[in-house]
Length: 194
Image (cartoon, rainbow, N blue to C red; front, side):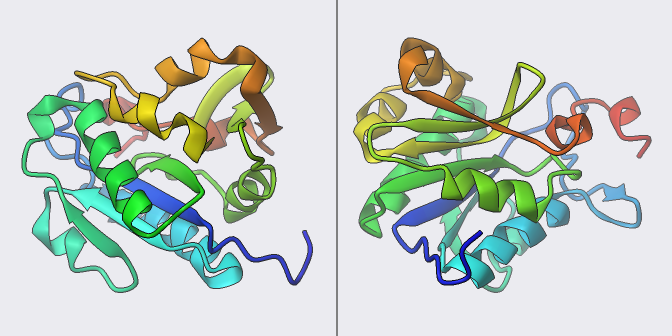
């Protein structure tokens, strides 16, 4: 990666507002290898901020998380409205910053590396969607150019950005993760041996 690359036109949106229905409660504060689960994604997002200048928008309903240094806090008081509500809040915050691109990260993906996130951001292009994948399996994070913001804002229920991706297969650029474990998210207690 070029040492002088900047990505201040790109907002990283850390989605940390879910209620953990499949998990049985708020999983983001549960210890994973000795640290709260969500901190792994936060560290990766902040590494991109440090290296590329990308602002980090944290969408959450958990007040202590919203007070975390370095993030632009966006409070989600209605997590029951599903992923689409979190996405809308994130896109609106990115638009206020004048962002050309929005990177959506989930906060329950502890094995994601900063190298993969940086390569994904580097792959962004006008009119395109870049998605981290491994061996043909789509994962997160995903980068959307602003051309797709209206469709993201129109999502409803618990539908995420993958729905928009599926509507535009020719616009998707796949960025290969180093390891399949990077795409693993923690949905149930047994997933991460918490």
